[in-house]
Length: 211
Image (cartoon, rainbow, N blue to C red; front, side, top):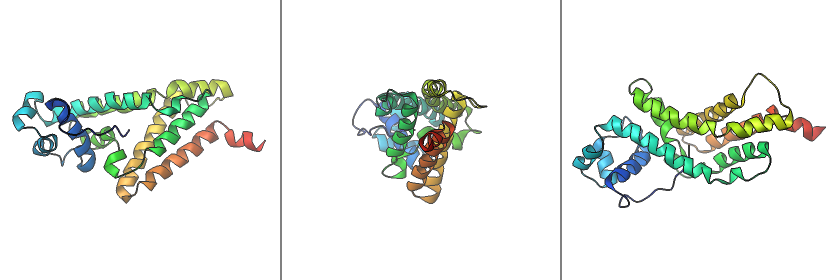
């Protein structure tokens, strides 16, 4: 969902160092391919420290999904897309912001919880549910602005603010998958361009411009 600033493994206590390592290593190589040894090496801690804080790798998976949710909530709360006075402008600014942070290597901008949800949805339901809390919780932060934009512009239809908020995440997560499949971040940015066009169409912006 976001690109929280990486911290060096030397900062923080062993638990935080393991969570930061998991955030970065799992995004780079996937949950299944990441071993406890990989995490300890990246965090600069011993296996004893790992098992002091986490019962097993799946417990770490749940914890890092929650860590991701907390840190990305802070990241998005401080983002500039909240600044416009107009509700629809804030929604479109959100899409533009999501596009703008698709930079660097794939592991730098793709979503930890999206990656883990795809891998663990059947094998590790606790991780899947933690990932769901993060993804759906983030989507819910967009609902108030979408609903306000509907009211302000008199938009009616068979869709809701909640369903459009979820759709934004469908497009973003799908864009990440395509970027990985094609090894090309531009594919994710392309998806956000189409999401912008779709939202403008829903709110009849093109019609207003040509009227």
